[in-house]
Length: 111
Image (cartoon, rainbow, N blue to C red; front, side):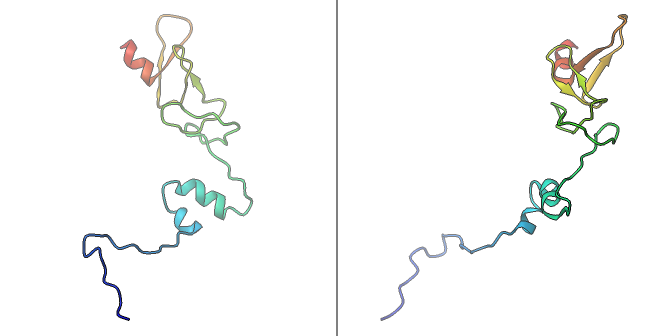
């Protein structure tokens, strides 16, 4: 019995079986997080604050850029209440006794 002909000609793309392992995943989109999870011998990865490089003691992250923050570097927007880092917050030291912290989204509306 002769072999069947290939009905799709050259229009169909090649379909190859590809094995994707943990090492390949660790080089992809979430490379840093997956590499820590896979290759860290202790299993616990410590994160550093993006502003002062201290160890992060909680799960606080900037609402704008999603960088990790320690308790000392957290700034809360007085308009919407969002958490912001030193790079994404605008601090107004106007005539008041207290400083006014605005996230970058609220600062755009106040300008």
